[in-house]
Length: 186
Image (cartoon, rainbow, N blue to C red):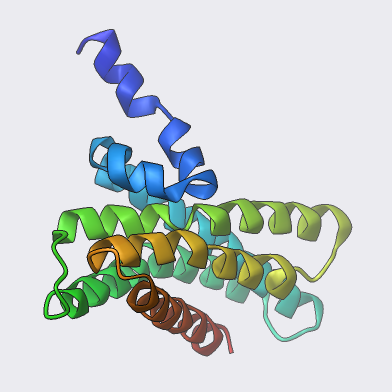
């Protein structure tokens, strides 16, 4: 394998740009990012988010250490399989509404859209562990809400540039993700 191919695989610039300029990434760089790497983003984000939730619940006596570990594992599954299912649902809904993007593109775009959630969840976990703060809502849920901005861009792109349809779709998808988190961790 040549050096240029390795460099392309390890280039984190598109991943960081999804948070700052999602439209550019979606238009120009998305296809070059391997799908497993894309799903590492929500997988880690939700692992950290669910771990924060478990730690918060453990500190108030509502979870055991094993329960905390179980929630972290569920977070990893939720971030990969759950986000993939929501992305597949969004793709299926977009088709009769004039969507032109394929399922592979949609999966990549939705997964990378959770990069803001990863940043917030990582910071929240740091504050949770270092300072003992309860951070699941302040950092975890807030990160998922911040992920709506890239998801609006993704949804708008899926729906042929229609902004309001993209806002509605991303809001519904984000709502599904947050309701799922609330049901799983209750």
